[in-house]
Amino acid sequence: MLHPLCICSARAVSEGGLDMPGKPFQAGQSGNPAGKAKGTRNRTTMALEAILDGESEALTRRAVKMALDGDTVAMRMCLDRLMPVRKDRPITFTLPEIETAADLTKATRALMQGVADGEITPSEAAELSKLVDAHVKAIEAVDFATRLAALEQTAGDKGGRR
Image 1 (tube, rainbow, N blue to C red):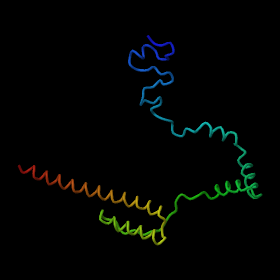
Image 2 (image 1 turned 45 degrees about the vertical axis):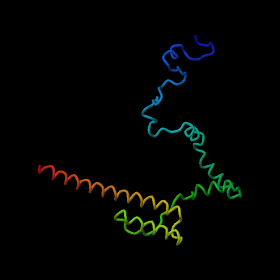
Image 3 (image 1 turned 60 degrees about the horizontal axis):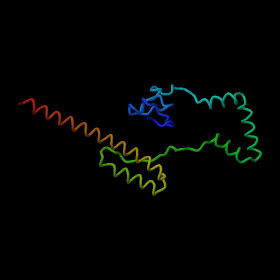
């Protein structure tokens, strides 16, 4: 007999599960397996755009006027829109040729020297190191595929002579 305060159905308890209201799907299954349709826009964004529609020019003029009058918050907002913070910059940096995995030490040495000389920042060197590492992995993958093909060819030649 269930306690009167229990919110579970007798059927759910007898089957070993819980009948949870508000959770119509099994664990691991979505109600929308295809996901949100491409190009679907957030309702809040669309509502704000509808409210501000036609007012953007006036608001922009007002923000610029406030910035020119010395409002530092308006000034920062205007400058952020005119010239946003750069996330990265193109750099000119010469790396030695990387033909084999053994050439990795030459590349890392050049990166460390570039940081030491002030040519590149440590974060730029870290990003370049990731690119170098990816290139070396690609070289290793090609080398592995070439060796495997040669081994299979050798094994095929030996197997055909029996």
